[in-house]
Image 1 (cartoon, helix red, strand yellow):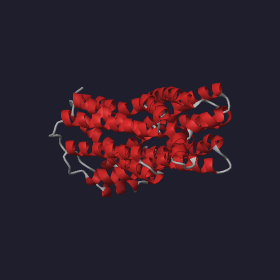
Image 2 (cartoon, one colour; image 1 turned 180 degrees about the vertical axis):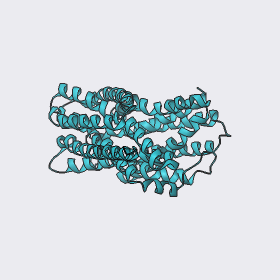
Image 3 (cartoon, one colour; image 1 turned 60 degrees about the horizontal axis):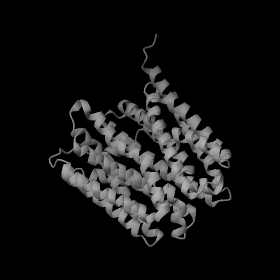
Image 4 (cartoon, rainbow, N blue to C red; image 1 turned 135 degrees about the vertical axis):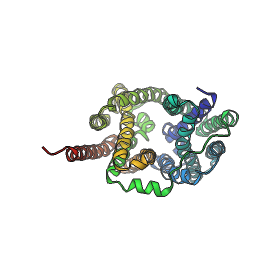
Length: 394
């Protein structure tokens, strides 16, 4: 693989770390900025919303830019966003800083995948894209626990300085290694995106994505607080547990891809049933350290296991219902994932602020997953109806 691809992978690692590392730092941030835990949870929501709505608009607006200049600009924006976060004297400015970083996130992955494919011969394009996205997976396994550990040891601002430094390294790597003559891809305009959203079948899948993926984030956003306040783990133990959780996520992502290869709807049905059941179980096991570790292993496995199936299913339906907008449909599903994160974190905040408290976040999240399961069953029945219509009458 060309060295330029490694620069993109490091950038993906930095972006993945800054998105999820806040989960381990929420109690620390809330205490330092003198805000409630639910208000701190909005730091997760606004970032995800920034990706959801910023990515489609900015990708369309920057389509005419030179690819290398665009990537350098995005990493510059990323560095500024994390630098402002590290310097934020107030909660409000921290929210603004997170939105700035989120804008870089969304466009980076939509454009970066195209660049990664262009850097290698045609028969290695899938491997190149997978390698770039591996930076995101590795960030969950190592970057988030390490960032949490640094934040607990030196303060949460030190974590954002560390992520900004990763951005500087990525900026230098892209400047030195990425070719300046990359061809511009075909960028989908806002009109193309609206046309894809006009498909009711694709809207059902986007609902599956937002609810099924976002359901876990009702509890995951407040996982650090749950582990400390309910289970009784020390603050220093949280980063180690997050490493274990991240490994489970990585394994689940790989296994989920294999399960979804033949029949994504069937795989998603099974995964959503298991995900809802484990979330409900977590509401009861959270009081026991040993049971919590076992439950988190299962929950981590299931949290990202549905991602390949959801993405594969969107592409499959787009080919049938919006054949001219397959890439747009796939990109909008990435937005649906982030909408799910924002929704889950927002609902979790309301649950924590209510009389239900932290202990209720897992089973509330299970309700969202059950709704996703209902949409999956509905979509599967519509698929069977479409097949029956296409079969010649005997």
